[in-house]
Image (cartoon, rainbow, N blue to C red):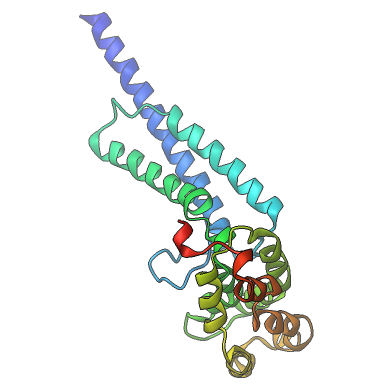
Length: 238
């Protein structure tokens, strides 16, 4: 009887340790996700981002995302929730759902390879995301906006490389969504500048303006894909 009790205690301790591993996995994953989750115009998945975030959609970054996700999936599958209380088993399943969402984004939906509108969200959308909160615009917040503006050229260069499976309807919709975007962007920037911290406001025109200009027009590959039907898959191919 005493041996059975000791065995039960050991099983309980092992279960608690395993559950604690889930906490560590969740903390590591959501810290990583705050940096790498794509920006979107949907309010639902909006999350708190680190203040020093610099969007990076380069091919090397995409490869690193896949490697990191594979490691998270291995850690999740290594856990055994069978002996956990039901609420913790639910947490385990929710963690699996969060990982599956990232796998879906990278390898199933593949918006980063198929849809140029994805990069509108990662450029103009990334800036807009930080503008949504009402004023004041602190020095930290102003610097975040500037950093995202400055990242726009690199993101557009990454789009030129990544969009290898572009669909013509997506390209056409993206170009249509960017009609008259330049005056709209300039108006937005003009309204934003007086609200920014003075030390950031003075930097907007030089380094950031090229980013706005690049984001104000579709990349050449997007234009070519619409002009040349044979260079792109149609929606019927899926």
